[in-house]
Image 1: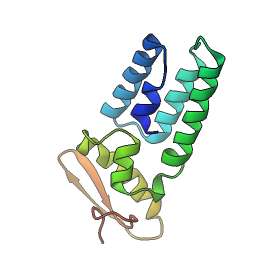
Image 2 (image 1 turned 60 degrees about the horizontal axis):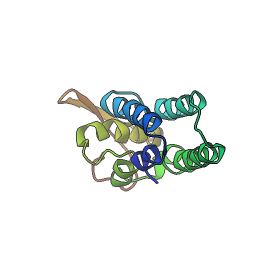
Image 3 (image 1 turned 90 degrees about the horizontal axis):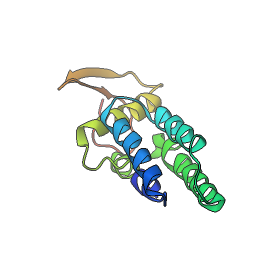
Length: 134
């Protein structure tokens, strides 16, 4: 279940729309994936779903998403990151997500950085990605 599917799994339309709004805002700004996890956790802690089972299922689904996509970001390819975070239509914004993982994975290797179109691209070691090179 990717980020968009997680948000759409909320059965109550008003709550779902609010969550989709916050996720949409996250996709448009430069906050990292840790902020996303905090945002979803805060949202879930401040809403009341009518059914306890629905709340528990959302929590379980969110924890599974967090484990697969956020905690494991360094082991994901760029295409997997685009899928998990619902960014297939947001190609340039996905570069920030890619850069976060490149920096985290390249601590042992020297990095070169350049500015292009207002985005920072960090080049170094990045597993399974053609975007990074020495």
